[in-house]
Image (cartoon, helix red, strand yellow):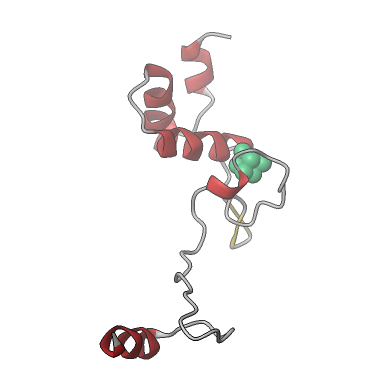
Length: 97
Ligand code: SF4
């Protein structure tokens, strides 16, 4: 199948991204985004759920890099406590140094 035929199957809003990956003009993260969107047949949302962020295929090599995941606040244990640090705790921790 030609590139033109592949691109023609992609929804218009993703065609530029998809084309850039084949042209070598996309960043690695953009290429992963394109692959994940293609994987869910370009239907990212399914009844409100994000099918890429909620992807359960943990065996996929791209799983940990898939886009649209909620950002996680880095957790740092400074006193051996198991509780995640919130904003106030981080400021207190910084000021204590
Ligand atoms: S991480 Fe999930 S959505 Fe992305 S390519 Fe792998 S299986 Fe598909």
